[in-house]
Length: 387
Ligand SMILES: *Cc1c(COP(=O)(O)O)cnc(C)c1O
Image (cartoon, rainbow, N blue to C red; front, side, top):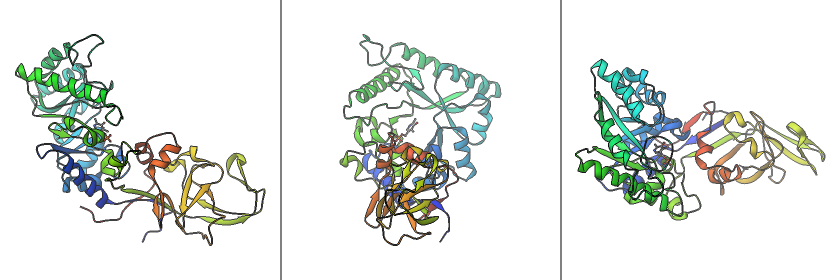
C-alpha cells in the first residue's frame, strides 16, 4: 500500500476491455490506432500504449514529437503517427526513431521534401486533408454552391504534394468535427467529401495504402467512417463522446478514479469561515475535512462551493473556494470521519458513484478535459496487471 496524499488509480484491465470493444465494432480488415496523446488523456502514455498494443491496437497516435519519443524511449516499437505540427528540423529524429509525421499543408510537405531530398532519404508520412474540421490539412471543404462533394482544386493539390521527392505517402487522413452529434449530417458530409476525393484520386492512379478518419464517436456511431484504420482515444479510457446516450456509454469501462486521503478533520462552531475570501460560513456546528486536492493538481476552482466528493460512500459538498493544493468538505452529515480516511474525487466508493461526466457538466466542459488536465504531480497507480 502506498501513502500518497492524492493519487489516480488507473485500471489497465478496463482499458484492455475497451480496446477489445473497439475491435468488436470494426471490420477485421480495419486496423486500430490507439490515441495516447496528452499522456494518454492523463492515464499515462506508456502503460496505456502497452496495454492497447497487447489488446488489439496495431499502432499509436500522438500529437507531438516529444510524446512519440517518450514511447520509443520506453521500448515501444509499434508504428507511431504524430498528428500535430512537427518542425522540419526534426527530420533526422523522425528517421532515427522511426516516427511518422503528418503533412498538413503543401508548404509543410515541400519543406520536408527539400530536406529529405537533400539528405537522400525517404521519409514515411501521412497526408492530412481538411474535410470539415477547419483545423489542419489540405482544404477540401466544398465552397457554397460547389456541386462536387469536395472542393475541386484539392484534387490537383494532393497530386502535386504526392509527387514531391523524399516523401513516401503511406497514409491519408481527415478528422471529424461532429461525429458525436445527434444530427450526423455534417459527419456524413465529411465522409462523402473524403471518400469521393480519394475515389477520384484513385481514378487518376493515386492510391494511399491506409485511409482513416474515425475518432471514438466515428467508431461508435458511423461504420462508414471506419475505412482502413480507426483512431479512437476517449473511448479507450472508458469515457463516452455521448455521455447522455446510454447505448453508446454503457458498454464502456471508465479506467481512472481520483482519490485522496483526508488531511485534517475539525469540529467548528456556527459562523466559522472557510477558505480564501471567506465565501462559506457555517450556519450550525459543522465538521469540516481538508482534502489535499487543488487546481495545481488539475482540479477545477470552478467547483468552489459547488463540487462534490465521496466520503464513506456518501456525497459531500465542497465548502469555500478550491485552493491551489487543498479543498475543504462539509462532512457534518457523515458519522465518524477521521483524518487519513479515503476520499473519492471521481470514481466510486461503496455504493456511491461520482462520474467524470458529472464533474465535466458542473465545470461546463467535456470529460476529455477533466482527465487530460490531471497534472504530473498526481501519481498514477496501476491497479490491475500490467502488460
Ligand atoms: C484526439 C484525436 C483523435 C481521438 O479522438 P477521440 O475523440 O478522443 O476518440 C483522433 N484523431 C486525431 C487527429 C486526434 O487529434
